[in-house]
Image (cartoon, rainbow, N blue to C red; front, side, top):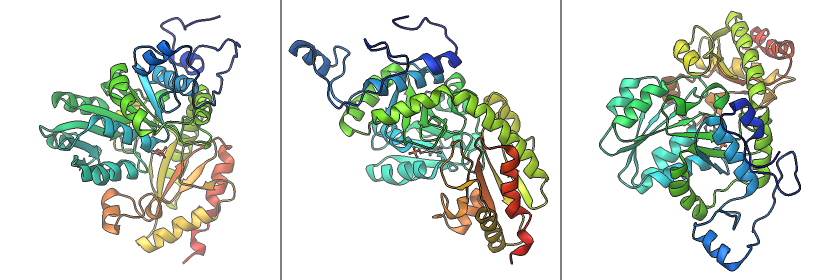
Length: 406
Ligand SMILES: *Cc1c(COP(=O)(O)O)cnc(C)c1O
């Protein structure tokens, strides 16, 4: 077999097959090209490549074949024409905003988005004259009401961290397009296995490859999946100069991760649903937040938008009479763990637990946290691949001994 793949292959096939063509050595697995420069065949070709008139590798800040393999595979899985990989998820947000916005432009984003995303747009880009409005994640009318003549971008993340709030991608795409703006969706939690935002009208899909795409908590990575013209004409020129490129080694690790993304996410999501149902019954638990549960406020929308699967992240509130007691109880549950990890990452094969109120949302005031629904008793779980009985036993160590603390 040689040459390009035939058209019409399914996403499952593309997840293991889409990549750059094999080198003359005929390697079956994608090669790892650790090189910063590329030898040019002749001076005329070199000139054409630098002028962008001919495809070909020139320098590592512009492109690398292993990184290109990852971009092609992720684009194929998301159903976009192209993709551009970046050094981290935040580098992808940075690259998108830097490429598409200028002073005076306006961005609308959800107030439940990833903390660094909100800071980057709401504070850092504000210093350069980019205006923004944060709106409630699930309130479509609030998104519509926030539109201004200068609105260029709507930026949503669904489901969100840590409360797994779900927004209506198709409705937001409609609002964006009527305003002459673009919709970008951070697809970190659902991944293309469960949710393909472009099929619902989104223009750009942003990823933190650090999470489920790598899937084993080893490397930082990010990507923007978008139309070919946008990648080539908007993202590439900025990336070339700004240099937030993904290392080929990290690209190779994530490329490998994409091959098992579907089976990992299916297994981890099934385990998360079972765990969510079990936690809902536990007397020490006040509430479980998980899109796969009928008690989730956007359950119907989530099931429609996410292939009927809730994903592999849930959060729950321990019962308590006061914020102080809630914090002490949540800390007790976390400190009793012997198997699972106290770790703020997610999307790993190892189950990771975190206390959002003192970590990812630690800088908010208590009032802001209350408004966001992030109580002191809230624990987030990114469920991995351990046996369900071991996960439950590890939680019960703390949950069943809450009466031993003051
Ligand atoms: C982690 C994360 C990011 C940022 O990605 P990094 O790779 O850590 O830079 C953005 N969005 C979401 C939803 C995330 O979970």
